Length: 395
Image 1: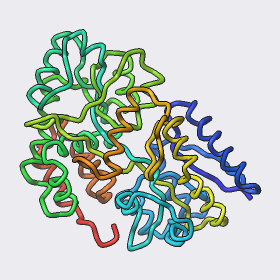
Image 2: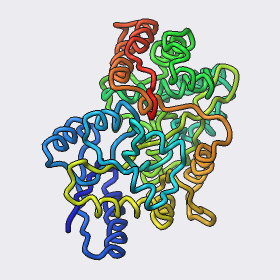
Image 3: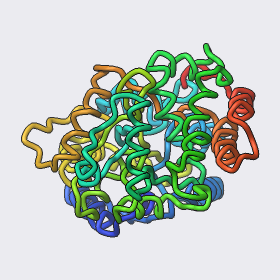
């Protein structure tokens, strides 16, 4: 039988070949099952996939973002296959906190794919030439940005045309400002998104840094890809984004790259981390057993090692990475995210995968408005609070 497997189109075409090779390994161990790989533009997946799943023409297995604003929407519409029994039967050893991200109304509806963190990549060559080091706090970060600007270098590469990029920036700045406990209180509804700390975090990057000239001109007109290109070319010294970019960085740039958390007012700050995405099965699949077998392979030790060594992502389940062949940048990220997985240290959260669709819309569009001066940071924070829905049991 043939099952279809849909993933977001990787930025690097060579990544598709890596995925195909991984599928070959699965097929070799599961005679009689053929996997047809399909790719889709990540910016189109939400609208296209929902339509396909509702009509029954969608893929059997697909990658998608987790949390109430993404997979939760599909769950509410009854479009996801219940994997609770498959977890019990196969004994999948997914981290408990990651499993919670794909659990809705008490049903486990997906398999977490990878652990990620968001922070700031920096060009070590540019920093060394200007005698700069990673910032000790926010004041130090501003001094670094001023030095870079005076040297004719754009301090921060940032494009916000798609809107979601702004959410990642706020996740970084807010996580470092209020800490893990503060983020947990916000996401649980124990604190208001209109509190001064949130207003200050929005103001810092989207108003103050914009006016100080730390960002490219007109960020809302710049796509994520173009913002990446600005960093790759050496025209920008830093780019704030996630660990999903590490493979492209390593295969593209000709300079050494470092990675640090967005700084806090009184210290180095903390990384905002969490679950990058998950793999799900259509409720209308005609081949549920074959689909579950593919998921079983995706949480195997063999696939986990492949993720680390070949695809440079961190699995959401324990994997022995001793002796893994990694480059320095990814080695640092691997060590950092291992702490997220094990619950060690303090980490913030990537907001949009933990909040509802209405909240994300208010956040993304609101941050775009602050950048062009049509809304104040306080207005956006109040609109986010109005749209926020505290999590219910099982989410």
